[in-house]
Length: 415
Image (spheres, one colour):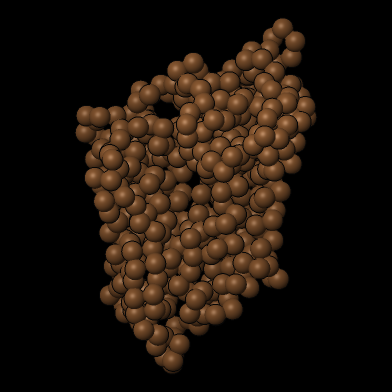
């Protein structure tokens, strides 16, 4: 989706906010958002460590709650993708999905085995301290962050071989969700981390190794990206070096997440296929929350404000101020549409909390679920049109937004 325009913004006198100041605030919000993601991942590591050291039902539930809390700030960072190559090149390490979970651990018999597309789909590295990968013998006697990063993640150049990040950890905490489009998340027992005769699923010590190593790797990855947005960081430098390119990056991130990624790949596609495997947080049934915080992150970028996990606020000169100076009507419409899309996403979240699981919403014939999902999809698509108008109002030149077959070419989905 290509949006075009000229470039006259930077010759206009008397702007309510200077583009350079808007970009610095954008980078400040990115640094704070990733910093909060790091803080909550560190808390997750403490909970994971407690589970592995002294397994119990209570410890497993605490680790799950820590994972859910860690998703809140991270999902709000996704609006920094797409327009920022440093972020987009890195993102697959921490939030890639969906994954062929049989690469990591045991799966239900109905899952099947290796396929032509992925001969590692049932590798089960937790059960195999040694295996062959691309003709090379791999020593996995100890599962480390380095093993996950260097040998397992996207092994065989297959994107579904997701071995690291939030969703690998989610799988290790919840296990597979075998409920289809009925209510219910994964039901991994705490005894999958127990010792001796109490161990279920086999290889409980190695499962604990993997969980700890994956969480340590997540922390290292979040430390790296947080540093990229610090005062001397490369991501901050890249986005602030050229104001026109920086503002284009902001709007590209907003529009691509809103349209191709959220409305298309994460929402409309799953509804078209009636497939719970297309859920973003499919093991934990946290998808409705993740969608909501993604939408909130888009709004954060436009309004130049982010509420941190400690309740404090990072805010400053905003993209909205630039748009209102260029075309007040576009700004007013986009603000209203952002409010509407966040409200529609919140309605999804509230429905899930009140007993209509996102899985159930995807079921064929569930009119209420389809209505809720499509209200959010329509809101996201509508606001994307106003994001395009903002590009034009600011005369930013060419901005290429992510598309999705589910929105742009629905017939291709079924081919």
